[in-house]
Length: 345
Figure (cartoon, rainbow, N blue to C red):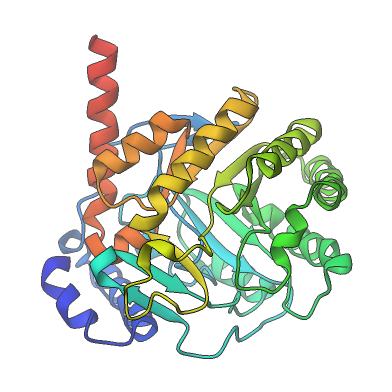
């Protein structure tokens, strides 16, 4: 079905098409037409971060910022869904246009700027949802919160989403909030993570359930910076790391009419660099900390390659824009085939 609809959507402004697609998924789900949208894959049970996933292919944060479409997205067969990024207070994000398709490169540039309705609205949406699968909630800081107060924003969100999430992702790697990536600097990151880890354990004790906490990092990091981040993650015993967010390196798309738009680049041009970060972090972290691989998965073989690089789970976003919901089952089935082939060998 998506092959018929995509040409129409691609004639629209990218952000308008995004909203229309989510609306259409909701309508299809409520009217029992979801079976015409996608066929969910058979389960491929996967364990990570102490959680059980029905399959290792998830939805990356950013598609459903306010957890307003969980039921419809959950019906597409994802092994887990991550919503957000959410901030303490509502914010409108950056001025439009702020989302661009680079069709010849199967890529997207966005400078959304953490547009969302605030953490309280997200929690209300989660509570209204019937979705009972693995749910990640991605948290961030408001644009006008200075970095020396950033931990306060993350703690505010952590405390409010903790009871409703299967895991929490700490996003310090979006390029669209000025200065956010500075939180990845080693000394700053060490203090920041220690503060959040203390809150994580406190909340787990209070609520009788420890929820994993993951850190989402950028692809635009030097080897020395990756060394530093890995050192902090290991010292703090963080549960997992998501590799990677979007890139600020637009050299691969410089010839595109939108190639010089400000913002983070995702999709196919990110694939190789994202895999390099996954592989590098796996070498640094060993088996102590789990890795979620995201960035540039456009077909089933891409998902296998990302797992071969060291990811235990993968996430999709831009690939869904170009391939549609069928990409979920394609990735799960290809991962299954590769696993069966290797087990038989």
